Length: 187
Image 1 (cartoon, rainbow, N blue to C red):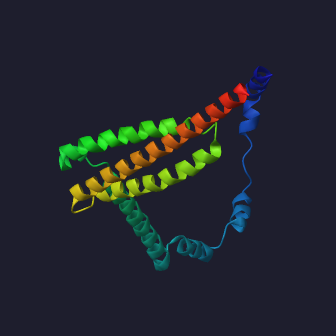
Image 2: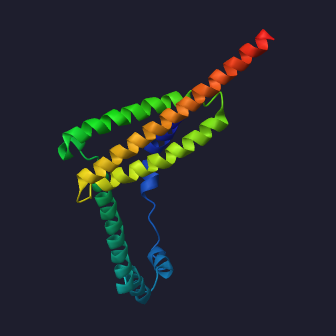
């Protein structure tokens, strides 16, 4: 199809070239063009007003300020090297943190067996954990980092004690259930 069209154009090329636009074509085009005064108004409309420029500048300053604030917040929240504060406290913090993590895993094992009890126990630990996280955030900016680190360790110790008690309660409940099961079997 395209080959036939190409052949037709080649054979009739001279007939296409002899056609020229009429002389009044430009006059008709000029009638549709905007007047010279309206072109100046369009250029004025394209320039920015001072209030627009100030609004854009204020927006840019606000965005930059918020970004800088978020950057500073992120920098402060970076983890502090506990060993640089006090190596002995750093070891204690690591010990209690791993102990609490292990005890929490043990506590999660009862979640399926007794979800209400787990919910009650985990609510208490969640409160203490939020206090620990707040102390951890404050550690970077605190003038007395050693004191804050001691408070964090004490928080972990209390969490561990509570978790030990909770696990003891669970063990007592399980023993009571076993004894009740054995008593019913003996009857």
